[in-house]
Length: 192
Image 1 (spheres, rainbow, N blue to C red):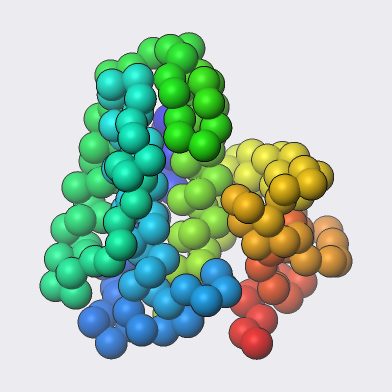
Image 2: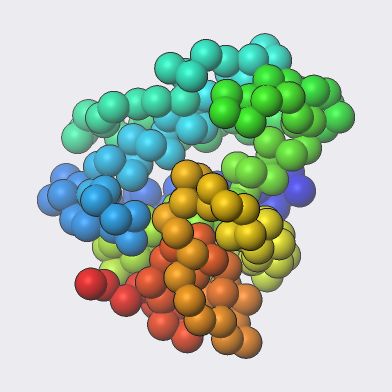
C-alpha cells in the first residue's frame, strides 16, 4: 500500500507542478472551493496526518491550512508530501494512532485514507486545470471499496460531498460519483 501511495503522490505532484498562479482561482469539482482552497486543504491534511503518524496524535489545527502563498504552494506541497512519506516509512503499520475526527486507528488505515484523499483530490486538481487523471487500477479498486463504505454512511456528506446518482462499468467514475463528483461515464468532470 505504501508503494501505491508513493506512486499516487508522485503523479499528483507532477500535476501540481503544472499549476500557474492564474490557475489558483479556477473552480474545482469540490463545490465552493477554488484550486487555491483545495490545495491548502490537501497540504493541511498531509501535515496533520504526518504529525499524527510520527507522534501518535496531532491537534485539529495541524490538519488545517487556511491559505497558500502563491509563489510557494508547490514547495509546501512537496514538503508536506515528504513529511507524510517519511512518517509512514518510519512507523509500523499496526501502530495505533489518534487521528482527529476519527479516533484511534492503525497507521495502515490512515495510509489508505490518504491514498483515497490523494487520488480523489488529485483528480479534482487535474480536472480544474483541464487535465485527465486516473490512478493505477489497484488504487482505483481500493478507493472504490472505501467510497462504497463512505457513501453508505448516514453522514456521508461530512467527509466528501453527498453521493451522486448513477453507476456504470467504470470503477473510477463510480467511485468519484459515490464521493459526490459530477462525472461522465469515462470519468471526466461535468462542470456545472
